[in-house]
Length: 390
Image (cartoon, rainbow, N blue to C red; front, side, top):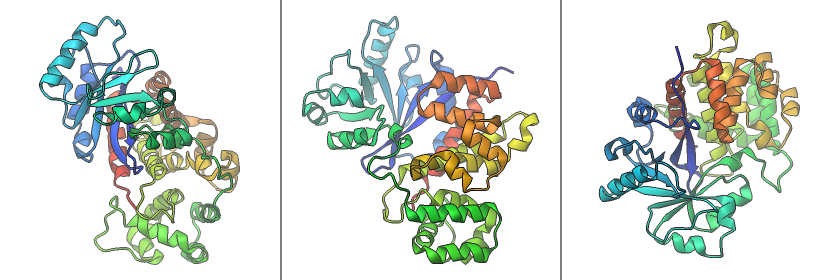
């Protein structure tokens, strides 16, 4: 059975580092109303926080009704003489008449529009930084500016300081400058994770928390988050084990490494990205070919997804990190070299994050994962991770 084309969903960050919207991309050359209809009809789409915006690419064959969705913004590209310009102009006029929100993608080759002519302006970080001073500040008085292709932490800070209300999150895949040494708390957590992987007894685990009170505080914040919503607050490590069980607790310990014990209530986008990766791989593991079933264990898939960003977080090479963790061989191979079916799934996620959508599409097809299944898994993973607010 042929696989349908996938849709790729990218979170957009607000000024407070929380997810504030999502940008949709189609596989190159495969944009279609059918794919957009699958998104609209997905129960997982309805479950996601209704305060968040969806930036949807404009389709020349779409009618006004087909293009619009609840809380969506239709995104147009700067006019470039394309064959579909006339149809897109008609669509834009219809959307404006219906007072539907519209956005424009600008490039270095295109002229900036007049302030207020579009609801949103999407502009690449490098392009934005080449503009004359205060250009974006003036634009932002009547248009919401969205920075895209934000590849470094410096670009992210520049965008926040120059009137960009939303930005993409590519910078999360790079190590921040000025903090090359791993935090001692996180190094102790690696030791804790090693004990968990070896199925150590509760006393050995509790001893680590006694050595590092910050870990205990962070764990309790995490397990009491909206993603779990326990009937009554969990107040101790022993209670967490009793209520969650060791397997579920191990899942939250894997995410705990991304939780900054000093950040109070501030969202941590890297934690949510790791959580979304873990849940996505867990859901897709069930879609792998039956011959690969030994590699399809959901717990291992979740581990591969969450651990895939440890090198960024700890500013350490992945081989050095894995040397300290007694992971299953299939997990280690997936993390080190994208080997095995879980490694190929991780390769899909990495390609999507780098906007190499041709590679991502090809790898999904090779694995036999249908585009609709991939969309549902993305939405469910984003919905679950979006509720983690320590």
